[in-house]
Image 1: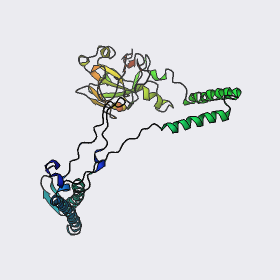
Image 2: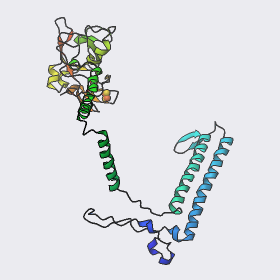
Image 3: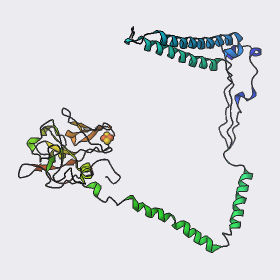
Length: 352
Ligand code: FES
């Protein structure tokens, strides 16, 4: 039943502020404010028996909550902690935990449901509109601010004492330069350091685990080998700095499986060498899936396809992994044929 079906005399008196102000369109506000829609009385507002029913429903919910809380206490005291019961579809569980969870859940639910039902059916449902006030200060306040400002400028004699005014402006203009000079302390410019690694033409690929130079026959199909440049020792001071850029992963693919022509040209008998540093935020890549030739970065799951130029096929990385061009020297060892041709690791603002 809605308020439209109720005789006029049974409806409660309408409150003046209930519908808010209705605006009128004019030149400044071309869209009139329609105000709030007509207020719909609830059945409980016009029928005392319905209100009593709601009251009883709320009281019932609160009573069930009280009983459930008592049930919680009784369960805690009486049920042995090692008794198990079968509850479909969960299976066998502790009877004590089940009883405690059930009674506490019912107690809390009934308090919430009772409160919601009370608010929806019996508490006042008067609709209130709060008018917005203009943000702009009233004209008299603005006039006072202007007058105060002019008075202050006059008292400071800034207009009359030009020497003071000009030197002050000079001081205020120059003082930010101190901050600009301090930017130098952020450290030396990286220049081209971010673009270069220890790899260079003729540097042997050294196995990170055995510390021995790698031969093509050391790299088996399906294995993932990590390498560092010849001459970079773990005991050296700059090891961490350099390996963070030069770490390499080496995989042997069937040459027929390599889809990217440049990748094939830069490989040796299907052996490809890629930067181990993820191009997202620089985690070391460590997982290789032999069947798909995908490598996965464990940090945020960026996935690269090693059979297709290590392009990104999933995840947040923005660039393919840089490839190192490799070959074999006269003694049969794998060697680099130059440095990476692009910066390794995460993208930075100079990267093209
Ligand atoms: S660092 Fe590799 S996916 Fe984020």
